Image (cartoon, rainbow, N blue to C red; front, top):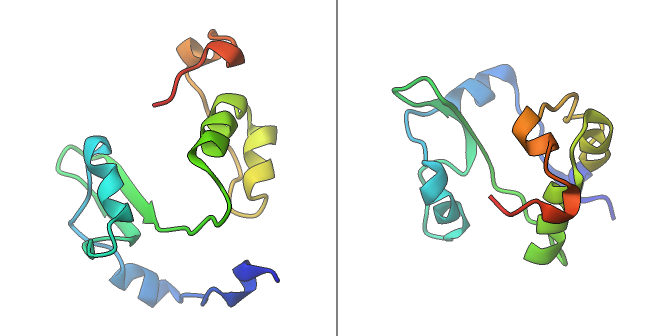
Length: 109
């Protein structure tokens, strides 16, 4: 079954209601996995320093951490980025420093 079809569509008003002044720093990002964490699992917020925080709690059954690590090492251009989700992922950019590292030598993070 296509689980994407089971997701509710949100109106612009509902999306606006999901905006929040709460955000997680990258060092706190694992908190979103805690079932009791309710601050911001789906929505967006802008931190005081202007950084945009977007949260989307996505269940990826049968996908291991090793699989995700491989994907983010492998994904280094917009074509590959679109493979993940061709409708939502329109474009991606990577730093020059990232692209200078061979895929096999890239590290998590």
